[in-house]
Image 1 (cartoon, helix red, strand yellow):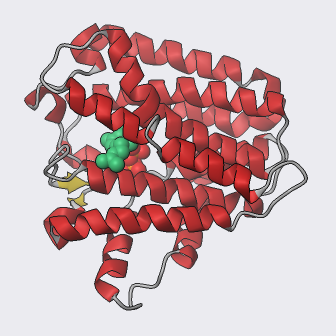
Image 2 (tube, rainbow, N blue to C red):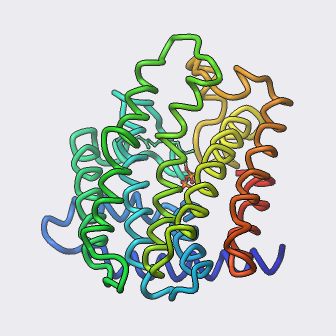
Length: 294
Ligand code: GRG
């Protein structure tokens, strides 16, 4: 595990340096928006999605440099979704990544614009990915737009809003999290694979891995909301229960949710088998996420 911890630390440093290069400098006019974009991006997230992109490229025999623009783009799309998700008209949260949320610091109007600007910059990062013999920039853009669009991230948020105040079934909850959480993990992995000119079989393995890992990640996120403190999470703990939100623990109970997370992680690990030994980092990450405490 100490080997994984130092690997994760190194990857985070590389991703942060690349994000620093890609994002407009804070002093660039109009500086308020650029400073605010950086406030949310550099607030200390786990960088799970870009790390998955880099590890997926490695699992398919690719190079880190080729995968980095996609890695940065998924982190920036993720940050946009958090900034908008925290708005008073959405989940209405005051704390994110251990800091006051964007709208608390810069105001609601600015937070909407920061999210919009981040999403737009993320597409520019995708457009800068080098083409290879198998994938063109158009392929990367199509993948990225599908993930951010009305059937995946936005669609998941719509289902989430529609579900407010209702009793949802396990199947309905899965539908929300396939779109809200798993889709971006799948996209992160596929972009890494594509940067390594992955075969159809390799991309399918990454997709199956990301789907199960994404659902496991969400189950664990729901468990941590009940079992951890605000200080440890860096976001408001107990929020789901307080807002009467349907979650895995509220539908399945805490113990069954833990077993569900373990089952989904096992399915994710099974999906990696066709990728062989090169998928060793992805395997370690899946084990690590199951045991995470924040
Ligand atoms: C456009 C409003 C709008 C929403 C898009 C995807 C989405 C819909 C909203 C995302 C908000 C959200 C809480 C999604 C669930 C996935 C999840 C558990 C996110 C937290 O991810 P972590 O724990 O966060 O990786 P860090 O801060 O570590 O990056």
